Length: 226
Image (cartoon, rainbow, N blue to C red; front, side, top):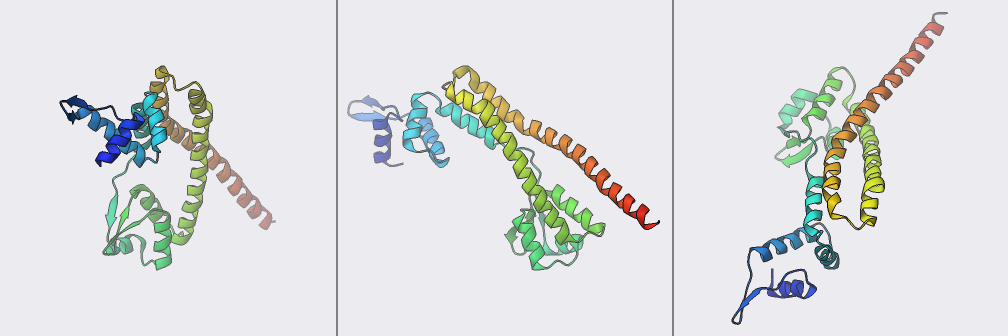
C-alpha cells in the first residue's frame, strides 16, 4: 500500500494516526490490522465512504465477521477428479454436447489435460445410477437443471425471509450491539434449518406426485382392459 493511500485513510479517519517520536511516525500491529480490515471490505465491494461509516459506528469488524459466517461452507464434499477414461467407464460414450451440459450445470469442471473435477460426487453418483437404470443421460441432466432452478427459488425464499423479518428490523434499529451475536447465530443456523425444511417438504410433495401420477397410470390401464 502506498504512502498516499495511508495518508488518505488517516485523513478520512479510517486509520488512526501513527505514534510520532521526534519527526518519525511509527505504525504498529493495530494499524496493520486496520489496513487489512479496509482491504477486506474493499475486496467485498465496499466504497471508502461506506467503510468510513462502518468504522465510525464500530461495526466494521462485526460486519466482516458476519460476512465470514455467511461465506462459510454449508455442507462440503471432497471433490472427485476424473479422467476421460473414468468418465467413459462410468457413463459410457458421451458426446460433447452432454459434457458441455454437465459443465454448465457445474457437475463437471474442466481442469485441463482432459480431466474433470466433480464438485459434488453425490450428484454425479445420482446421475450415474439413473443412467444405469436406462434413463438417457441428457434427460437426466435436463431434470437436474429443473431441480437447480427450483432450489434457487427455494433458497431465495429463505434469504428473503431472513432479510425481511430479521435484518431489516435490525438495520432500522441502528445495529444494536447486543443483537450482533443473535444475527450471526441465525445466519449460521438458517442454512441447515432451510435444508431440513426443504427435504421434509420435498418428501411430502414427492409422495403426492408419485401417488397422483401412478394413480393416473392405473386408471388408464383399467380403462384399456374394458
